[in-house]
Amino acid sequence: MLDFIQINEKDNVVVALKDMEGIPAGHKKAIKDIKAGENVIKYGHSIGVAKADIKAGEWVHTHNIKTGLGELLEYSYTPQYSEVTKSEPSTFMGYKREDGKAGIRNEVWIIPTVGCVNDIAKIIEKQAQALKTDEVDVICSFTHPYGCSQLGEDHQNTQKVLAGLVNHPNAAAVLVLGLGCENNHIEGLKEFIGSYNEDRVKFLVCQDVEDEVESAMGILEDLVKYASSFKREPIDVSELVIGLKCGGSDGFSGITANPLVGVFSDILISKGGSTILTEVPEMFGAETLLMDRCISPEIFNKTVELINDFKGYFIRHNQEIYENPSPGNKKGGISTLEDKSLGCTQKGGMAPVVDVLKYGEGVKAKGLNLLQAPGNDLVAATALVASGAHVVLFTTGRGTPFGSPVPTVKISSNSALYQKKSNWIDFNAGQILEGKDIKELGQEFYNYLIDLASGKILAKTEQNGIRDLAIFKDGVTL
Image (tube, rainbow, N blue to C red; front, side, top):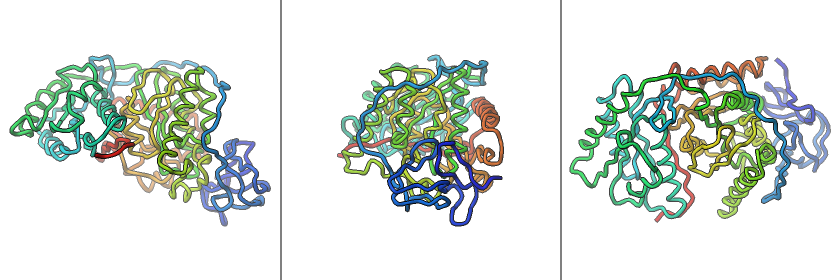
């Protein structure tokens, strides 16, 4: 195994593949003198500016490099992308829904409209296990603290996400559980849900009945019966929508796990499928690479709006736009936001950007989509699900046990994490550091995902029963 790796021939730093004298694994070493004020180059692009003279051989990190980013910027559209070459079609074994969508799981979901009925939803979930059949994978509830005392767009964010869950094809049947006095009342939520099959989606207002648990059990009996009618059948992989996310990144994330997911994304898109890239603050510093891959001036303008609107969000709250990377990222060897972003955006592979989605908006175009959501792991993963992701791929260098309402596949950037946290991690991208060809491993990972989508494999989050829901809040609470 090599001691260091140079990612791009233009780079003036290399990354330590193991602990070296004075330079921890995942951290950077200068391979030439870098004067104060000069760019530090990694991934072939600037990851910041030297704060002082750096000699060849010296450790390069937060003590001698700072971000070179400004605030609101002017952008120009200079398209640089290649059309996707179509590859051999393939199928997975999934569930065809009556609305034409496809699911990879056959589950019954209980969705509260408001946090006031969270514990009631949990009580109902527990009792409903007696109704489960072999045809139903899981009966579960998704609790959250919102749905009342919210105003305007903040309130609508909650409604959009809950409606996205109600309409998600992994849910064969859904019970929407309301209280009765919340401002996210069921009739208002129905406007965001749109048309629905009354056999598939049912509603219960707790204040309207004497015993809400007993009433819910009667409704769930019908919903489980309906859900049990679905069987797995061959479905073209072009129906798959996969969310792309990273967290707890380290200095290897941009070398192994994120590029591996990028290879997967390109394979899926070549077969007509769709992927969603989010974490907008972690696009800052790499946004022009995505803008140059937009398929039209319209999509370019939507990407500019995506970036600048999120910067405006920081400014409105009097926060530094570049308050990133996190302490864990820095410990793992990531020095600046540019360093993090250039590694993060590699999850999107090389495919053109076909659309930009508002928070809570569903995927409409096949291919690589960008989504408005923050970097927070739980919030971003939930946003991906609300936009239609069947699976969330989560790359990590440090590990995390969290899950989302859909299978949340953890991909380690290094083998040590894979071995240490085998109860969290599903797939090891650290094999790339040990000489495994990334394209070969990308095909292995694609095959793994098809098996997972077909129900042959469960993600560790599914095995551990971990399903988190977190809604993006940006507004006052009454």
